[in-house]
Image 1 (cartoon, helix red, strand yellow):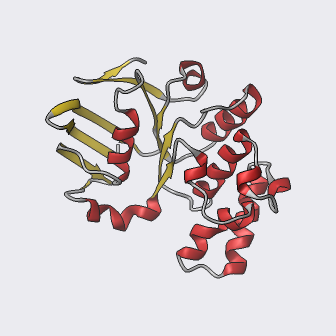
Image 2 (tube, rainbow, N blue to C red):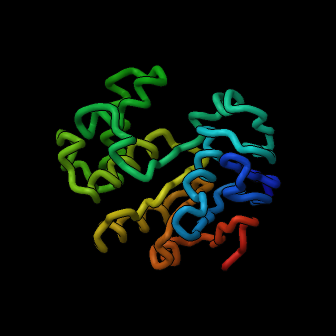
Length: 217
């Protein structure tokens, strides 16, 4: 089966102290994987390494079977990788919901009117079209999370990397995010500390420890 992401003997050190080491993981085409672990175990760091935002201390990452030898190698795959930050406010660039969801499309060279049409269609798909003209920083925590997801999904990424997607959400918003994730075909890696949330998303579960990844289920 074709793999979207291969992680081979990955390690990350801070001042010669290993945050984690010997991490290996294969994520197949359209497969969903969850990584759980204690606070400070390095879950967000691992996700940023996979996204090409920071570099590992040792080991190898392959995206679509191509080795990423340095951070510049990720540039050709930026459009294929959607990354959800733990804090939704870090995701936003434009003032209104519609402008923000359309921003990446426009930035990639799409005509502004076509970008807005695609953005509106994504808002409808996620049932948040009523937020189109809202200022992003005035939204509730749950609304921000779903708008941030919309801004990623509108690009139709082949790989999704989601850092605590259920963070600070009430039960209703968590269920909506679960439904969204279960409906997506992209290869997906979810980092979370909420086991109940993860169990409602159809995915393999791994625990991140200092010495490696342990398959839970």
